[in-house]
Each structure stands twice: as C-alpha cells, then as structure tokens.
Image 1 (cartoon, rainbow, N blue to C red):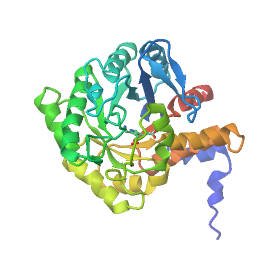
Image 2 (spheres, rainbow, N blue to C red):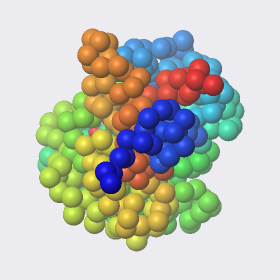
Image 3 (cartoon, rainbow, N blue to C red):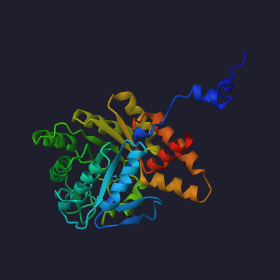
Image 4 (cartoon, rainbow, N blue to C red):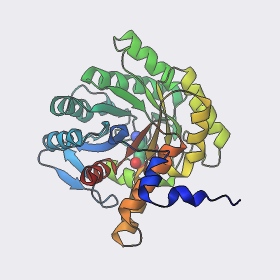
Length: 323
Ligand code: PBG
C-alpha cells in the first residue's frame, strides 16, 4: 500500500473540507496614522496605499473599516510639536487622544487600540527619555504611564506599550488601576525585535532616531530564548495579551508562545513586510493577493489570534468580493 496524501487535495471541495487554518476579518487590526490639519490624506512613499489622515478624513475611513467587519484599529499619532520630554504624547488634546474620540463616535463597533510609546513625540525620535545619549528606563516608564492614562481617559479600548522598557507593563497596570481604569486591557508588544523591517514606518511616523538606534531596548533578532523570557515577564506583570513583532521572520517565537501560555497572541506584520509584498506585487514579480493571503495564513497557523496588518482593509475587500 502506498501512502497517497494527494487524495484529499484533488479538488477544492476536498481541500476545503480538511482545511486547518482560517482567517477572519474580525481578527484583523488596521494600523492608522493620524496628523493635524484638515482634509489631509498624505501618501507614504514606502507604503503605497497607506496615508496619514487628518481627523476629518479619519471618520469616513473608520466607518468603512467597520462596515468591512474588521476587528479594530491601532492608532499612531504624528504631533505638530515634539520635545525632549514627549509632552504632546500625553496632552489631553493630543492628536491620538482626539482621534480616539473620533473613531469611537464614527465606528463604535471597532476596537480602538493605542500605541503607547514616545518615539513619535520626542525631538530625538527615541522611545524614552534620553540623558547623555542613553535611553533611561524608569524615567521613561513614568512618562509611558501618563501616556497610557491619557489614552484610557480619552476612551481607548486597549493600550499597547511598544517601547520595550523594563517593568512598564506592571507600572502601567498599577497606574490604570489606581485611576479608575482597571477595566482597560494591556496588549504588550512583549517580544519586539530591533528590526530593519520598521524602516517604512519611521518614514510614515517621522520617528527615525536622530542618533543611535533602538538596540539598547529592542530584542536581538538572534535571540529566541530571550524573546520568550520577555513575553513571560509581561505575563507575570499583568499583560492581558502579548505580541510578537515583526511577524513572518519570527514565527518560531509566535509558535513557542502559543505552546507556553494561554493569553491571546497578536502578531504585527510590520511596515517592511508590507512594503516588500507591495513592491514585488507592483512589479508583477508576485501575485500580491495570493502572497498576502499566504503570509497571513502562515501567521495564524503559527499561533496568532489577532493580526495587525496594513493589508487588513484590502483583505476584507477581497473576502467580500469572494462571496
Ligand atoms: C513604536 C513603534 C514602531 C512600530 C510600531 N510601534 C517603530 C519602532 O519601534 O521603531 C513599527 C511598526 C511598523 O514597522 O509597521 N512606536
């Protein structure tokens, strides 16, 4: 007798019957960049199809995302004013704080996640408070707590610290709890690598560090065990959800976390992963849609519950046209 595994692959009805992994739009989160001003839809050269939106444009956009059935959005703000203390990151009238209110009003069915970091708000582009060229840990955590509180106060459904400072999840949890926001979950960017794949995002968010890099706090791409420790520490500190970022180059980390803990897991298919697929698609070197669907399926197969991806809206449109 010969093993004939091809028997169950012979036609689409059979393949569908035994399919193991499914992607639903409700698990997808669309990143959205917001800027000051009016009637702004600023293209981002290295991310074709993605724009920075002013708040008036944001409303129509998120209504469309909600109609497509997406799970949520994650907001990134580009403020007018940057300084060394990142004060515009926690200002009550800050760009993200106002954007939250706009999204909640226009599309209450979307989950609003906010990125809690300082790099878009500091004049030097680092994720924390800098002294003598060093990103300070505990001083940065204090400011991050203020940022998270200001997002919660503005109505964010989930706060997502992406800075990779030590102890920030516990500190943010305590700050939320003592200020009446014990119901607000924390999605920790728990295993976040110092990656070249964030390049286009830094163009989009104007957050390239003026000097140095992020290697003093983000993970070494070579370190699997340390990445697992980072996430498990955040579980102990009270994170409600974990994240692996970038996604496709770190599926081993995602898969291991799926085995090791029962928290919902998110994976972030980052700007560089988007740019690669877009560029190859635009050149006719890849079938963009098939390559995107395969990538997202792989991320889910490895263990992601939630996928943050710049393709969320495109994917939802493709799904709609299928049926
Ligand atoms: C930090 C942050 C970054 C991204 C998400 N949050 C940039 C960085 O760490 O340098 C990158 C996301 C992407 O590349 O799509 N605020």
